Amino acid sequence: MLTSKNKEISNVATRKKTTTKKTAKATVKRSVAAKKSTKKAFWKVEPNINTVYWVLIGIAVVAAASLSYNTNQRVNDIYDQIDAQTIKEQ
Image 1 (cartoon, rainbow, N blue to C red):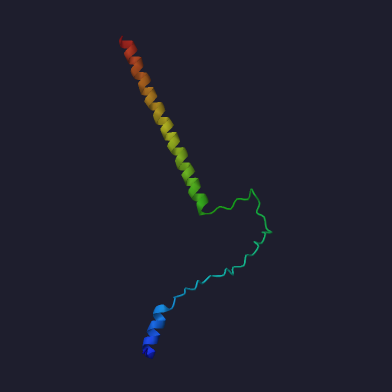
Image 2: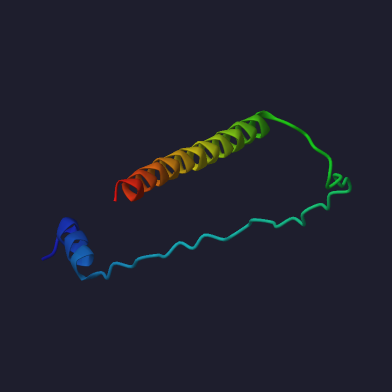
């Protein structure tokens, strides 16, 4: 004979386990972006710290280019003097 404990064990063993799937519902509402009513003037200059940085970088680039050009001219002048001396010696 099956006792109540044995019946519960046999029911658990023969019973199929069911799985339930949980689905999440998206409840996000999308809102329409508001249009900006104020327009900035295109040519209006509003300096800030980035403006200062870019001006300094620009000055540094122009200075480096000038230094490079002047150095190149001096080296070419030295080569010209060497060539002139070798021509006189021959």
